[in-house]
Length: 139
Image (cartoon, rainbow, N blue to C red; front, side, top):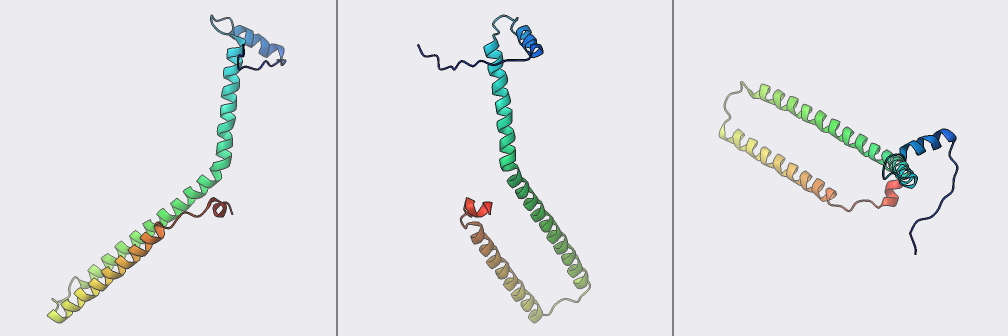
């Protein structure tokens, strides 16, 4: 009859052996079960630490990149707000535009929006490009 278990023999320090004996006094407790649970927990903690060592630096790098991008977006938003405030201050007390000037303003605004649209499309296309291979990422 196969039990799917392997017998191991090892020595424990006397103090640790006494603690193990004390734990086995409870009904249903066995040295095998206690040592199996302890060894499983220790190996799982070690495996978790190995995952942190393996993926931690990459996650840290990605976090720093995301923070830099966030700071840049915040700075650009602030600059745009200041620029808009400046422009609104400049044009606050100007007389009404004549029809030709108003038409020119609408044309410039339309060209500006077309430029923004083209840039957003280009960014969108770049976002859809395939991810670089893992080998390129490790270099």
